[in-house]
Each structure stands twice: as C-alpha cells, then as structure tokens.
Length: 225
Ligand code: PGA
Image (tube, rainbow, N blue to C red; front, side, top):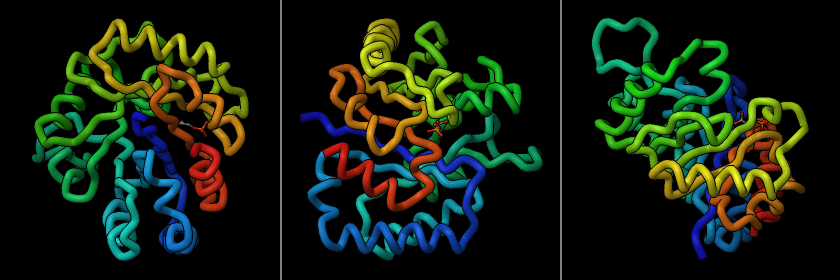
C-alpha cells in the first residue's frame, strides 16, 4: 500500500507555548501507539518560518516520525530582499515546502511567474515542493511531484468537495501533469478524512484548522488508518 500524506498547515497560528503543548500531547500518544498509526503515512507539520527551528528540535527531542514543512519560500536567492526567507535557509530545518497556497495567491498577489521562481529556488536547494492549486485547470510546473488540490471555497469554510469529485480532479491532475501524488485540502476534519483517503487517486490530505488541535490531529491519524 502506498503511504498517505497527512500535512498539517498551521498558517499564521500558534505561539511558542502552544507548540510545546502540541508536541507534548502528540509525543505522549506516540509513546503508546504512534508506530501503528504512523506506519503507512508521511506526516508533515508546516509552522510559521519563525517556528521552524523549534518544531525541528521538538521532533528530534521526542524522536517523532514527523517531517517539517515551510508554508512558503522566497522567489530569490540570498541577498538584499528584506523579509524574504530563502530555500537555502529553509532546508536547514525543513524537508517540504508549500508553494502557491490560495492565501498566498490572493493576499500576497503571487502570480504564475513568481510561483515558477519559487519552485526553481526550492528545487535548487532540494526541498520537496507541495504545489497548491485551486482546480485542475491551474498551471503546474513540470518538475512538481506533489500537488495539493484545494478548492478555494472549501478552505476554512466547513464545506468540502465530494470525495468522488476530488478523486476525479486528482486523476485529471495526474494525467495532465507530472505529479505522482495528489492530496486534497479544504475543510478536512477527523470524520471526512477517511472518505478522501479511500479514493484511489488521492494520496493524502492537507488539513489547516483541524491540524491546530493536537487531539484532532491525533484523531485524524487514527481515523486515517
Ligand atoms: P482548512 O485549510 O483545512 O482550514 O480548510 C486547508 C488549507 O488551506 O490548506
């Protein structure tokens, strides 16, 4: 059986104390039955840039099979780009990076040209890109292996695409791009996760809100097994 991705996108949430609590809870659960539930999954947590080192340290302190992901990356190499965080900096802490999330496209006006440069930077520094698209018509750079299909109307609304339609979309994305994996995002929760993961063409999920609460994150892991 192929492994399924469970990628928690924390967005601009959490402060240091919350993060300690989150990992304490998850580590406690893992110490009892974590191996069983983690076995068939690729677990990724995407905190804010400023928390990447802390999350990396906590994962190694508790010896958890969780990967670190960043939520974005600079489209530039290192240099005079105030406020930008480069792929070379990120890769010291993270293995994955989200590129093209709909919130980046909408609030930060990221266009296809910028996204292409971001992908180039990420690839140059050996980050694994999770490339987010709102539908099957979006452009997907040829070097992308992991795509997140996230309908904009489903993000943070409590409304999801149907698992069957998400599956069809994932299939189309695989046909028209070089993506090996397509994951679904948009109001994934502890109950509906199973229906998405049951679909043939869906290789995982990208929950935002539900990943913030460690109890719910753990429940997703259990229900996805
Ligand atoms: P949501 O966010 O699960 O809170 O809808 C998903 C995402 O934006 O990645």
